[in-house]
Image 1 (cartoon, rainbow, N blue to C red):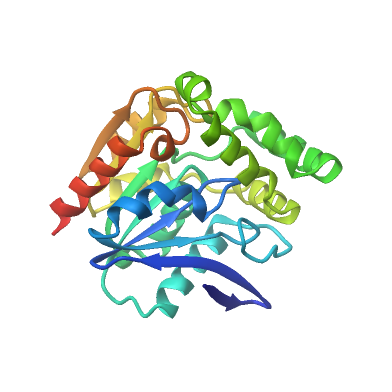
Image 2: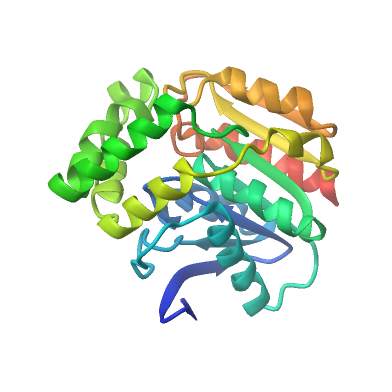
Length: 264
């Protein structure tokens, strides 16, 4: 389904009934990364997945995709769906940055929050340089180059050796992301603010999920969040890298289900 905004559109999907649960994907992925959750949790919650601008089937808007812009896109979708009750928001990696921006701007929106494979802090100087290099590379070599260079870092060694179909699926998902979407997201992540001071202000229950083999965002970032957020629990998933919801979907889904039940 499409939400038309700003001379373009965002693609989304909604399924199930119960408490609204908005899934926000990472970079440079799409709403399809949440397929194992939709298949299992739709009897537990009203599941909403969105393709952020420039990703998946959404329109490739030009410009910088600041985390506030992406958060406001999510808010506009919830408003369009006439969702009035508080929601649970689950963001992975860049989706976690968007979740933090959404909470900063609309704290009353939240009933609960699930951070997956993410961090609260801004890019380091080295990180900003790496973003700029990636922008140059995607302009010159295309999205396929980004997919090729990121692929090995997305997964646990266990996943790489035992689940080639998943690895191929994620490669294709990244390679099919628009160049404008990749550039806009890289620019937005490069310029994002430090959300660490926000952590102690989060008043809703929070579930933090992190793979022990995450090569892109180390586990200590999740531990930092758990130490700072008052009402939070941390689940460390072994044999999972940056995509624990796909690498160990059973463990991930059970944790989300238990979290939702506890919110009732």
